[in-house]
Amino acid sequence: MTTMDQQLLDGRGPSDWVHTDPWRVLRIQAEFVEGFGALAEVPRAVSVFGSARLKPGSEDYEAARNIGAALVRAGYAVITGGGPGAMEAANRGARESGGYSIGLGIELPFEQGLNEWVDLGVNFRYFFVRKTMFVKYAQAFVCVPGGFGTLDELFEALTLVQTNKITRFPIILFGSSFWGGLVDWIREQLAGTEKIGVTDVGLIHVTDSVDEVVELIDAAQQLLHQQVPADRQ
Ligand SMILES: CC(C)=CCNc1ncnc2c1ncn2[C@@H]1O[C@H](COP(=O)(O)O)[C@@H](O)[C@H]1O
Image 1 (cartoon, rainbow, N blue to C red):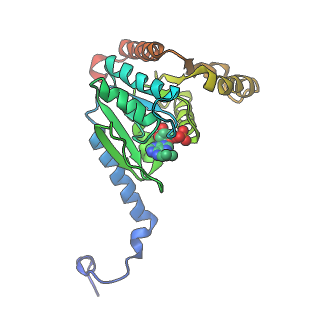
Image 2: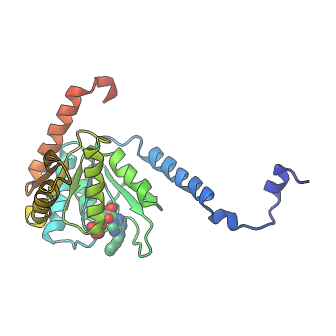
Image 3: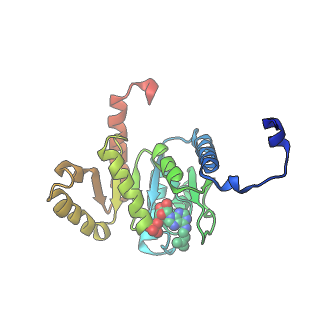
C-alpha cells in the first residue's frame, strides 16, 4: 500500500491529470486570486472598450484617447483590455494625462501582448475571469465603436445592471452614428415586443461629447455617495 505522501513525492507516473477539469478549476481560482490581488488598490476607475482594430489617427481612436485623458483629469483610473486599437488609445490618453493606466490582457492565439501605454497589466487566460475584473473594479463602462468583443462586454454590463447585480453603473456608448442603429433596434424590437422593459432602454446613454461622458459618470458617483454610508464607499 502506498501513502499519499509517497504518491506526491514520487515523480513518476501518468501526468494527464493536469489537463482535467478539477485541475483547471485551480488555475481559474489562481487567476481570480491574482486579479483581485493586483487590482485591490486601484482607485476609482472606468473601463473603456472598443475595437481592437482601430488605427492611430482615426476618428474613433482619437476619441478613445480623448476619453482616456478626460477620465484621468476627472480623477478616474482607466481600465482596458490592454490590447491594440481602442484599448491602446484609452490607455494612451490616460498615461499622457499622467493618470493610472490599467490593461487586463487576454491570452489569444494571435496575441500581441499588452500595449505600451499600460502601467499596471494583468494577463488572463479566461475571458470570464477577466470580465469579472472589468466590472468589479470600474465605476462605469464606456464603449467606443467596436465589434463582437465590444458588444460582448456591453451586453454583459447591461444584463448585470438590469438584474441588479451591479447598481448605479453608467453604460455609455460613444458615437451616435455608430451606435444609433443598435439603440433604435433595442427600443423598437426588444422594448417594442416586450423582450425588455421600456425603462431598460434608459440604461444606455449615447453621446458624442467627451465632456458628457465624464458628467454622466460623475452624476452617478454623486448619487452613489448620497446613498451609501461613508464607511462603505
Ligand atoms: C488585432 C487584434 C484583433 C488583436 C486582439 N487583441 C486583443 N487584446 C485584448 N483584448 C481584446 C483583443 N481583441 C478583443 N479584445 C476584447 O474585446 C474588445 C474588442 O473586441 P472587438 O475588436 O470589438 O471585437 C476589447 O474591449 C477587449 O476586451
